[in-house]
Image 1 (cartoon, rainbow, N blue to C red):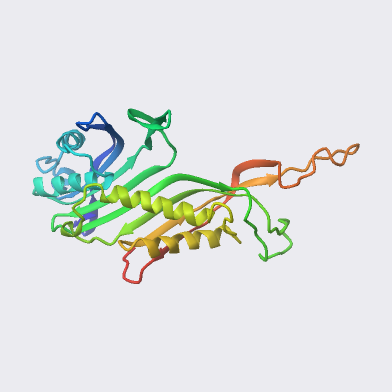
Image 2: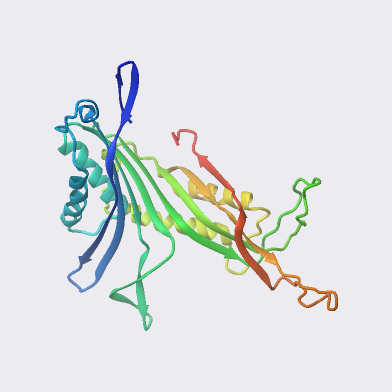
Length: 309
């Protein structure tokens, strides 16, 4: 945060533009199109204290200018690139083009447009909206120091067996029965920090981060479900979360830390009875009441020892 001591008080400030929406199409010579839709947030740390204290706007980068910069830079990216690379390009521009800007934070959420399949073939220019979103937050300082965090939001996962919960604390307020057989459903929010600390360390492949994102999602999903036939038993959401985080650090060497949020979205067994008919519906691991209010809230982070997360 840009801060300064004034009149014996500490003043902190930054300004920017949020929810700048941009769509970008790249057209290959072979006729295949690539499409992304991004919602961009910009925050600049800059020496423009005079605008607050002396009504002097001469050092302010207008937020409308920031918005326009997003479209100009999207146009200048003539080849397909990852959302992380675009965020880095924006942050580099703001910190190098404006003398008074000392650092820039760019946050982007990528909408999950996916290529459609028609008659078993990927369509050249047809897309449908998926579910989970790809996110990134990049900070670049004028010195070239770099901070890259990426993530995923809305990754909904469910398995109908291989889950239980038992051995927990029981007291006067506990009515939940123990079980070795239940549904397990969650909506994963994950964020991971890359180990790159300067612009010079970034891999030259413009789709490197896109490839890493796909790999991270695969690791999370594979660890949650286990093998297609056998699956993997989950003794708790906590245990599954830890195994997912551990797998990410084991298989992704450029990731220094990961944070996972995994709400336990409940599917409650349905048993219906009445005075005259005690077995209108008798639960046999088959009929459930889906509910996410209230739901369990489980989150944790896992880092390598040298991580600064």
